[in-house]
Image (cartoon, rainbow, N blue to C red):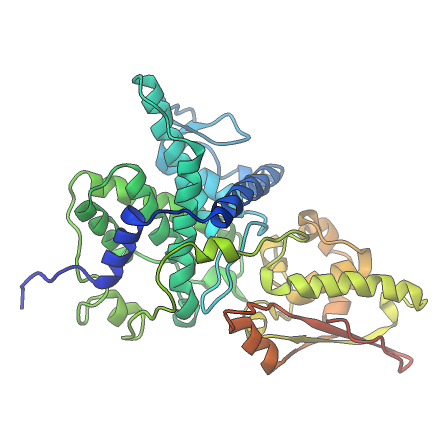
Length: 416
């Protein structure tokens, strides 16, 4: 039948939430403010890395956009699509911005690339024509809603298990909130969100051995900038695709999700921003955060016991299934992006040096032969209870435990 159906419920629910939900949670807005500061800090730190800055600026060098969005920490003033890429890439570069852990993990503050670029561009144009700019509260509300869309879909739906990257959800959430910011009608916003689903989606190839590479640091910038582009396309009155998810044979579910429909644990509100996780201590893939903490503790205990890393015979890493799937890695590590997704590397550096910073993933540190020697002595073992607690919405645990055994037969107490 060629009868055009009503829009899929998933599209309608996202759009009605973005247009109608009133964010009145003090905790959500306070957390969003902290998240804004944290995310900008991560982006500014990344500007000291040439691998990041070489990707930044306009597509055609020398282009300046009147009333364009400014990229913090740089001289660039760009159109909102390219500004979103710039801001999104610097935010994510060091793997240090916030994290959401669920069936699909991700980093909801990646959406700030599109939100901040659009808000700045709209505000500069408003001022130029004698109108009022947006307030920062508008940015915070957009952040809360983008976090919520990305995080609520992630709770029960694993895109990584079908080989798709979580930045799909960044593109989706950014399209919805940016579309609202630029003034799309309800029908136009439904069209925009459908365009985000019908789009090409990133494979996770660049996050996993043997292909791990730096695209994982700019993939979210790419996704949030694509969202701004799609929202602007929808604003021209371009049509959408109402059964983009549910169409037989040709819809998202049949083509990319093994025929399964999305499942939902809760309606959209402000839950995700209120419960998001910040990386306070280490720029490291989040499933390893507590393992790094344990390694920092063990660094001190090695000294107390009069031992050196050369005396270690074996290290057992008791962990959860997601950590094993993503960051348990043997063999050579080829670049910083490879190293910050290897739990063994992220344990070895603090055991040796008593620290883990963004600079510790660079070649100058990685060439220390003690690191790979230690990595070869580590083994990951799944603890089913850790995996269960990881998925428990009341716990949202991310536990790791390390046991160090020495060549002389002695061992240190496990640090969990």
